[in-house]
Image (cartoon, rainbow, N blue to C red; front, side, top):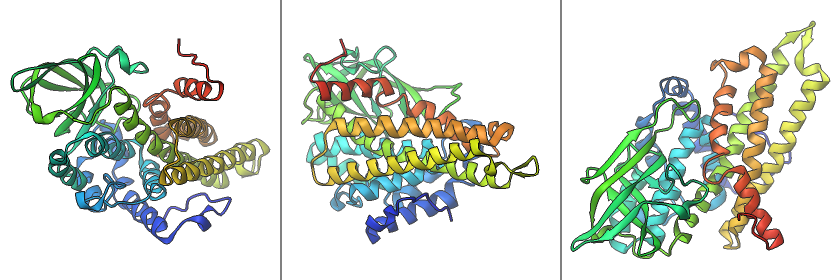
Length: 387
């Protein structure tokens, strides 16, 4: 089985339960993801047959309470789980992140008891799939500018608008849609099959090809009163969901980085040029040392934000720093690994090129690298540079 990089013996601080979660997730990735992911990446489809398997293993909504059918695991366990899933492919981790942090979390945090009891157990098993509709064609980094609207009717609400780049969009049974209602951002549950609700697959992606990515169109889409998320508190609510998801991204990126490091290390030790392995050359060793150094630093960051999360001491800026750093170094590691692999590095016989392409999306979505830079900049100076 895959052996993760642990240069600073960080396994020594993990509990047996945390190691068990990692082992379970790693075995799932080895047995079920790795044998099929190349095929699904090539045909640009999501391997939907894995969804209920992930549910049975407790990989969906993992930090939520057991009474809703969830694993109630701590955040280190959750992070290790997502690290292993992204070692397989960012699309697999993205599915779990969206289902857990962007669908189940807002229902748990902002929903009614009836909504929790109805949806969370079904989402935890994977029998139902959800998606998160915030981003629009003209509003990504500025979600407050959204044009999707909700109007009150005698029986509920009418939604109109377009959402873009929606993970799980065409396979979702429900969508958490964010819309402007009475000059505030409000969350709604929209069920598949609702009149006026339409999804269109986004084609031609060169990144996250194995992920289901869609456009959602809402045209006079009428939903019942009970489908409003009643505890929503303006734009802060979807941003809290994104903070949860970014936590998972910060951990997942380490998995992609480790996959690229391991593949390039093994290649460098066996690839012979000038009568010796290329691992013997100083320039190659410098690249490998950079990878080990940055992965180790990313692991330390990830472990600390998990501890802060479990202790209720986390700030959204802590997670911005982790997402910004860990994805950036993962992408650089993927590019360096591709270089070590040489011409072989552009072939999907190796995993590195797939990770490299995927990370181009991961560094962009759920807060671009530059936006997280400004988030941290405002926190440390007290001065907003967004305007």
